[in-house]
Length: 418
Image (cartoon, rainbow, N blue to C red; front, side, top):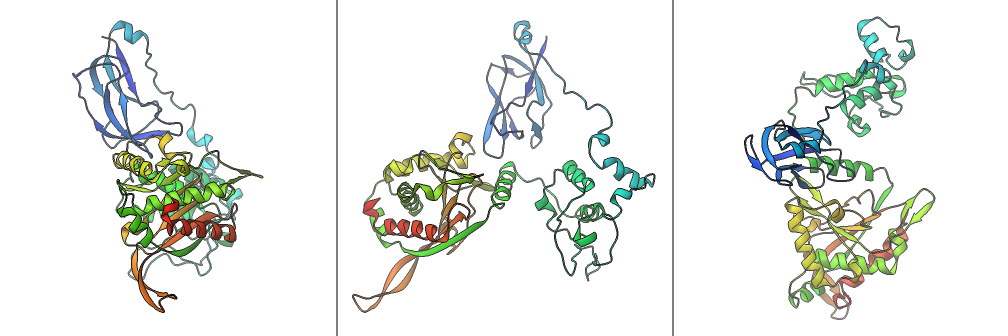
């Protein structure tokens, strides 16, 4: 019987690859059209790969925990002549010619290793300067630490080619001290570093961990700042007792931030080029711990959604997040987020806003604190928590951030306005 390939589909606009979580069928199993047979994990969610048509599973080439690019053939289905006619098996094209010729600097690198090239173009880049010690006191190889490290700075074509080959980013090179001129990172420095980590324990990070790492790397390219102040949570805790369902403090904070941004919409505008890009709706995300990473489902029109509805929507989104079933539409398009790091017993923190958002509000743990009461001329116990606002300093200054945060505090201390 003819065979129809099962390929890795494009499950999201930004998806380039996915990791196999589980395979639900085996060769010989009968399947129907659009039946979910493989679960895959991207950096955003766990989704299903379905059959292209009905038939019998001929073979599965994919393996659990294997990562495959979009379009990769994962297996085959024995199908009818009619179904097979609608599909064509397309083998991936093999790269033509010498791959080394396609990567700038690779030929020079090969020549330098074999001694067949002069390498004069990289003579200054690869000069050895005795400014570092590469062995620790214990006798084991350690990272070279110069007396005055100036960072990677300029990277030669050879270094960039090697980075591209290994899918390294410049952040991955932060622990390498360059021994070239003016602290420049040479190809020898890079290869020495790679050799030094070969014997260390290694495991592949999960897709969600990789996604979070990439988002934070992109976020950190902006000038970020943080302001903070204490809030009296007693009004929130008292108001919460009268509600059913009972919203958590983080939802009060989300609602307060949404109302404050509705009054000051320019505060969350994104600066892109020479333009400040605003938003047509106040969509706020809420950070949720999901496995080895963080997912941020977005609540749309949070300024127009009551606390009761926020509580219901939040419960649904948290359930989807922890099962890794959030779609890209559920996690994109927010203008700000809330992170409740107080659930971990932390007093204070500086969460980093997502790359496509301008700010993130952080809420610390509530603690009983003696506060001076002027009217009673005595100390009185209050439940206080620290609230921080981290923001893109290009879009917002300290004064604007302070006013926005004070408005959030005012709403939290008067929950009847929420």
